[in-house]
Image 1: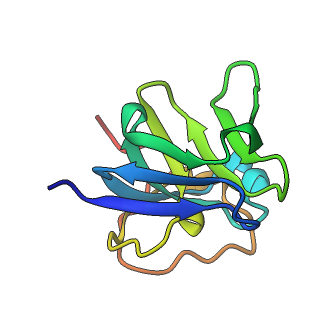
Image 2: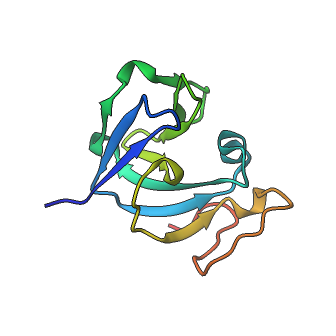
Length: 131
C-alpha cells in the first residue's frame, strides 16, 4: 500500500491527497518567498498524477505566470497549495497533515531573504543541485 498524505487549505473548503510523496525540500527564491509570505517555502514533491483533490474543486484557482510554474491556491481563504512543475507538483508542506518526511535539501539559497536563517542539516545549494 502506498503512502498517502491528506491536506487541506486554511478554511477547509478544499481538501486533497498526495499519493506516494517523493521528497521534501526548501526553496528560497524570491518567487517562493512571495508565494508563501515567509522566507521561502518547504514543499513535498509528488508526481502530478498523484495529487488528487478530494473536496472543493471549484475553490481551486490557478495563478499563471509566463515562464514560471503555475500556482494553485484556495480562492476562499488564499492558502497556497502547490506549484505546477509539469510532471511534478510542489505541494506546500504546511497544508499537509502528518508529513513524516524531513527536508532533504534547500535550493536557491543565494536568493534567500537577508533575515532568513536556514536551520537543520539538509544540504544547501546556491541555485540548483549539480546534475
